[in-house]
Length: 128
Image (cartoon, rainbow, N blue to C red):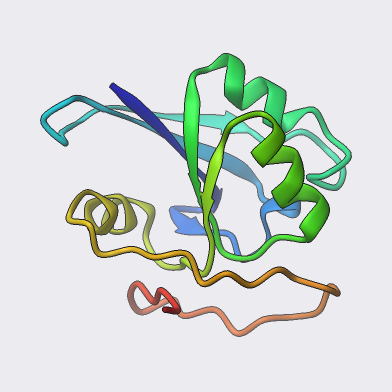
C-alpha cells in the first residue's frame, strides 16, 4: 500500500506546494488501485516552515506529486522520506492515474523565487 499527497486548490494541483488550500491524499493498493481519497486542510504559512512533512509522514505518505516548490521545502520532504515528483499540474484524479500508468517524471526544477504562474486548467501538463 502507498499513500500519495498532492497540494491542491479545488480539484487541481496547486502550482506552489507551500501555499495550497489543502492536500488530497490518495491510498493506493498493491494492484495500483485507488482505495481511498481524503482531503486534509493545509497548515498556514510557508511549506518549508510548517510541520506538513511530519504530518504527512505520520499519515504514511511516501510520495508527493507537486507543481513547484522551493529548495527548503524539497529538502524538508526528503528528510522525512517523502519522494517528490515536480512539474505536475491539472486534475488530481487524472494525475494519480498518470502516475499509476508510469507516465510521470520529476522535472528536476526548484522555484528560486515566488511569482505568478500560468495555470493549465484544461488538462494535465507534466514537464519532462
